[in-house]
Image (tube, rainbow, N blue to C red; front, side, top):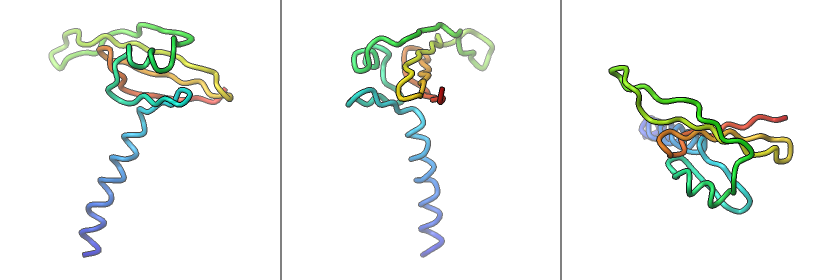
Length: 97
């Protein structure tokens, strides 16, 4: 029984850690993985910087989705970098300034 619990608990903890990786709080609003760029801008306002990074590459080497990086902050010493692929939020990174 204990072994079965551990076998179920570990994947659930990994999913929970992964889910929080692309979550960003702006004021009292929350944006997360999969949100559209327009939804993020409506909730968080315009970013300090918006850069077109490039394109994803498909397995056969063709150009895929457009990749953008938005920057918010610094807020309380933290700068946030939001990555969008094909207009959808895919990751959030933060760095202390």
